[in-house]
Length: 350
Ligand SMILES: [Zn+2]
Image (cartoon, rainbow, N blue to C red; front, side, top):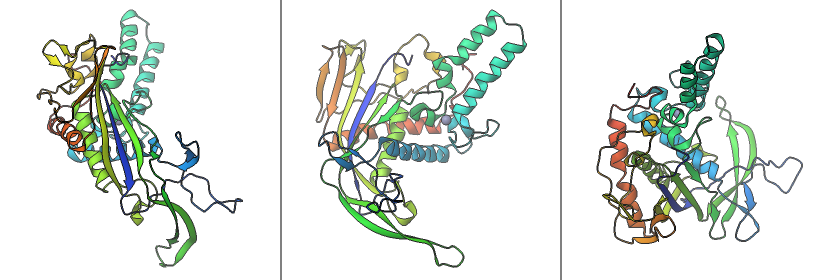
């Protein structure tokens, strides 16, 4: 299935430090270079101006969103174990919170061992093929991995690097590390380069998604935007609290030459992956979302692709409509979290 493309969502948002310094460390310490501070903000060439600039790497944002989504998921289903939400740092396959990537790799090598020691036959070959298939990997991946990927499954979510729209305000802060026992300065003082003002624009895209995934991301983005999910260095010092403002949302259905198909209107409905028909759908163990599909708000609604180019895309650029659409998926996440459903390595129809 994931060699095909059913639905796509692209959310462009602006993210700014919210009355707190922000430091995404570059890893370049002063060392022999006296012009550098002890801790420096990560820099790259701005794609528009061509000048060196501080920026927020997409990987930092993605990591922050992933770990927050994991925390929420584990909180709502504490008994779910690694099938519900794994721990990417737990590389022990016998553990109840083992990383899905590791667990799925182990499963693959176990079946190879069996193949080597037993009679090779067609049936086993078939099973082996099935275990390696996209569907089996997706089916055996937890809710976090289904969105953010693992070592066996490509991420369905991508985040661009966030570049500044204005000239960010850089300041220098001094810090020390305090000895826990003697309450004296254990290390430092060291100086840090922080951003205290600036607006950075990023785009998050999600492909082949279920509505519960959008709902979970909507919750995490809201928390990020309220300063409750800090990013970067110095979280315990109060660094990295951000505000988020939505700029543009696009919902697309690639490979469609018409807005209407059967009873569905691609320009008016937010369609869950499970709504589409495809031959190996059962292999993927999707959450059976039985709730009604959200209807897309007509406010601020603009159709930028009507099927002429084999794609239907609707777009919104007012904050209230974008929030309405994102919020309409939170119930789908709630239904998924409160249901008995768990991702499973076994096919449900077996
Ligand atoms: Zn996982």
